[in-house]
Image 1 (spheres, rainbow, N blue to C red):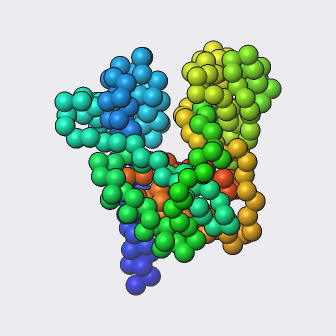
Image 2: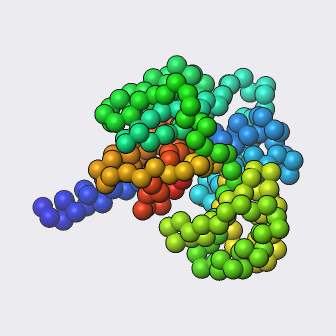
Length: 249
């Protein structure tokens, strides 16, 4: 019986991991499709598509899936995916931004509202949340990168802030300087693990331990929704960074 129980637990855990991976793939592929539709299917002239392809490759999305995603980006494809930004409040008065790609606004809003209500600690906002965030570029370096060397490389290329998150060095910059910062790091031999655009809170709100746990659970639940691409909050940066939810929370 003990062996059977252990096997069942392994299978159950693997099933959850596979489901999470499938959801991540779907989100990354949708972003490639929308980026291609908005800016064309040539990564060299479409920064958003280039970033989407890099993120997909980092997460091992199959190349043929990405090729089909770019083909679906053709405006003649017929299926309209639109960007939807929802604002909400979470535990302890935290601000939450929810970026979605959807072909049905009504469905997406209903699913997000249900998730917030179910948590017992969140609700949709009517506005004023977006002003608490700033859209920025972020470059995450591979573990072991030296801060002094990274600073020397990017100081004259538009970098605005350097921080350590989950043991890794990250560099923040304006969106227009993201590629310049990336190129500067590449030229020095520093290995870039990921480059992306995100919404960074202007200030973080400290929370009691119980509210921090509730916020972590809520953000994770929102990330699980099919139409949701990214979720941000101005709460504390969580301790884990395993991909179940974004490190910018």
